[in-house]
Image (cartoon, rainbow, N blue to C red; front, side, top):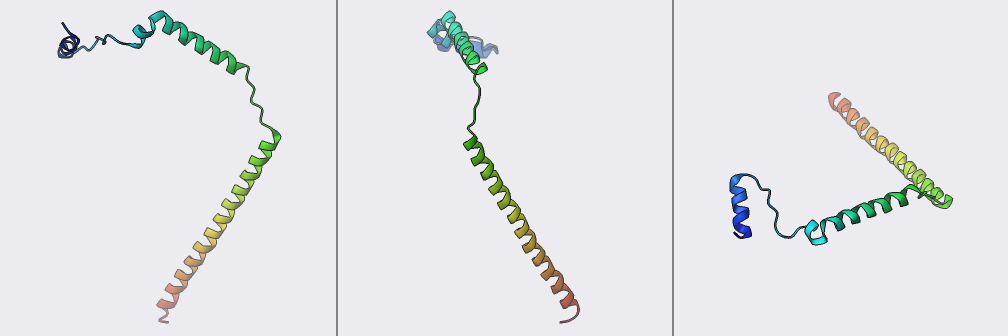
Length: 103
């Protein structure tokens, strides 16, 4: 029986449990794949546990300055938006008042 027939029979029976001849476990050898996964996980975790993140003070100053400038721009934009929106609202109110007065 070839692979296509086995796959078709498995699908017809409603249980697709068969694998094709090539898989990661068979290609690398089951034990080799497990050993490689455990070794790489151990190396990553042991290296990361002892790593300390050190940020130079100059970098912190740059980012603090950028954050301050961005906050100032956002506040200025909000004030400008409020002034423009308020001015438009005042003109609308004045237009309604004058149109109601018959001017």
